[in-house]
Length: 296
Ligand SMILES: N[C@@H](CCC[C@H](N)C(=O)O)C(=O)O
Image (cartoon, rainbow, N blue to C red; front, side, top):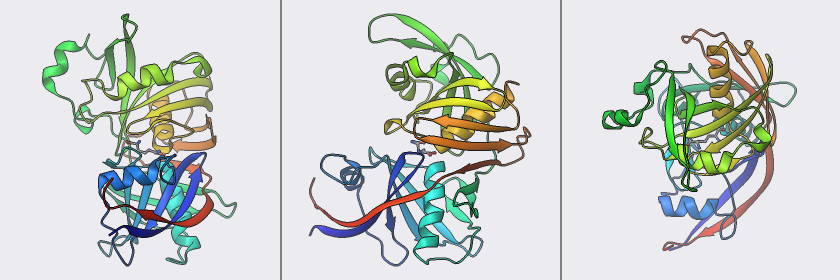
């Protein structure tokens, strides 16, 4: 039987979400059904689908699941975390302003701020290659990483030309590969992002960030997201880019990130044992009900 599902459409800096409440009842959706919901022509349309569940343990307040537009479940979503916090608060599911949330890769802590923005303790960044799994057999394809955190990755362009890009790899729970560009407005985000996302060096695929340094406390960023394509903003991508920039000595410890959909502020001490903090907007757009076919 087709399912009737109530949903809330939200966005954070233009990264848009369908939020589903499974605190009292599970919808049991398949990957195809998530893909249908995210479809901008046949479904509701979203970059990600966020599912809110009751706390799996007394240490946290909720559980948070994330599915990309391609239907795949992923570990983390920063802009989604802010929308998640706004959702559980506005729906009266909690009265707390600081909320502990279990995700696939650890606990994050969003906090609703008096100005309406949300600050999220995103946990610590990780640089170790084993955080971003790669297949040792692929190593022959490398010119050799300059260190464990920077990988020179060869790329074969569809037009037949060859090149390589220098990527700083950072995990925020989910994998990111960040490169520096001079002019992000003219960067080949779609062409190159698509190749990096599925590059053999990243068997789990990767989010590809393109960062233009404007000053020590300001960057412009575009991200080709794994499982989606280019989005108007990527919260974990912003965290990863700033961590990469601080690690490379190019950025101060608090940075405004200008995305296509708005501004995020990222703060990190520079110590890999410390959390990254992300602040940005979280907005409800509309609510509704959708019929989800059984067979797609
Ligand atoms: N939009 C997100 C990231 C969502 C997941 C990502 N596409 C992945 O596959 O890891 C964000 O705001 O962080």
